[in-house]
Image (cartoon, rainbow, N blue to C red; front, side, top):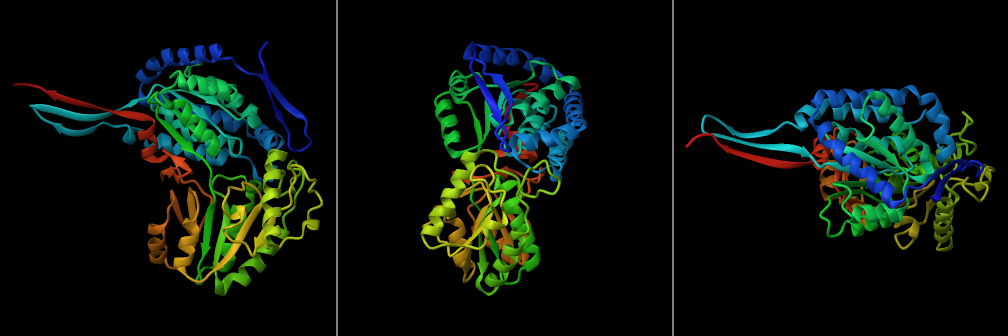
Length: 461
């Protein structure tokens, strides 16, 4: 009898779904069928693959009224924010719109004597390991372009969002994507790693923890299977003395606390010019104090529970450690009576922090942010780069040239000016250091999901 896995709601601890785990032989058979089906899928016209993928996307959208409360039950995001279909559709549509150009051959020479081209070929079978925090948008980042490029895709979703993979599979199959070309699978870590080590896949895309990324790399070692990894983050914001203060507070606080801080590129630490520091923390404290922590199914709730109580325990420990080391919390916890010591966690702003504290070094992935004053750009750059992560940085100034100079010094994947916590599908989504390697979306995303093949034809003597 197969083992099972469950999705437990952070709202009340109820079991929302229980599914059997595939064993290694069952999963290997699915991968083999995907490999057999992939060649015929890749042989279809590009326009046909695009149409089928976008039809699948549209069918997901038709279910959005049911998906939004389902997401709230699975991982705690308040229904008032309407789910993920806007970003889900935007990313897929953009990748569809650039596919012909991104996948077109590069012609070096074409004349009577020679034809020289570089063409793009699909890898074959792509494994997508998706996280729970944005379960639709993170999955579509790879799912749509991988299918459009001619790959078969196997999706392994997080246990916390078990129902997402099932919905995606149903929609894409109804749209006409062949069953074996896109499959949702439910696997434990050991089985997943074993399949990777057995070279069941031709490309692996993983979004999740640094530890998980290391396990993927270890499993793939020696197989020469390419991997794309989006891992941890500790994204900083820097508010300069000429910044629009209200705009900066509104955007950075939203980036720190939206989705209970469970965002890959959420803001986790902020550095503010000394001259603005007092005004910034006063306004930021008022903004956070106005949040309403509660049941995410209530339209009035602006801050839901964390996806699991163990995630909240990590954040509570970081806050307690910082306070014990001399930090000061600006938010009165009694304003948030829904904090139950479990998954429901009151938000917090910490000042008096420094980089000796875990809350300023390790990923929190929760509703807490540390804020420090800085003297100048040099100090801000040094502090922002003093991290083992590198996904995004958010700069706030009225001077774009100054921002560009600072951005050039940053060890990061994306530099934002006067915005934060946004994934633009036209730009390469990437990171450095322990945030991982590889790139998603944009033309470069297609290049990662295909391999180059050179054609050097001499037509005559």
